[in-house]
Image 1 (cartoon, rainbow, N blue to C red):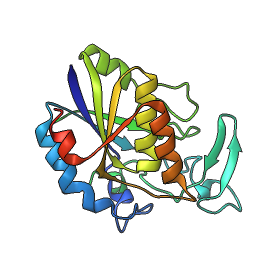
Image 2 (cartoon, rainbow, N blue to C red):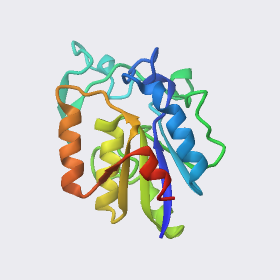
Image 3 (spheres, one colour):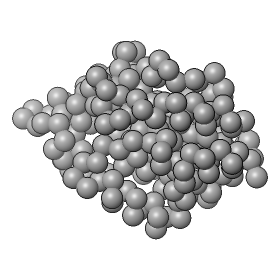
Length: 207
């Protein structure tokens, strides 16, 4: 069975000094590079918001980052402006070895829909095309790493299972925001979905 490594949102704005820094975000880069060198198929995701995206707190008068609002598709966390198209913050971390990447999935570029998952946006209906790409390449297993465990990585893992793929998450090649217990919730949801949580060394043995 063919396996693909999916590296989620390893971008400057999610690393220290960035607009939405994940604690320890930069420390996973060496582990991610080891994984990327080991897998035949490597796919990257990239948060790619237009200015004024509706997930930004700045787009809602009187709202602050990390507050929540209700939208047509459900509850939405409001974030600091981040990963704006064409900015340094949206670029991949400079030490990420992206040489083997065969596909970049950009997400969050629709102004009115946020997008955590590599497979579908937060309205849970709009697809990114990743499942179709993997199917065309006869890839049935994915290994996930990147940022952040409790949001974009976790949602991608669960949606990968919904799409019918075997999914493993490399915990020591991820880092979490852990907003009000979000990491514990994400781990529970992944476990219930059948996502395997594995170590770096276990992942290197599965390629």
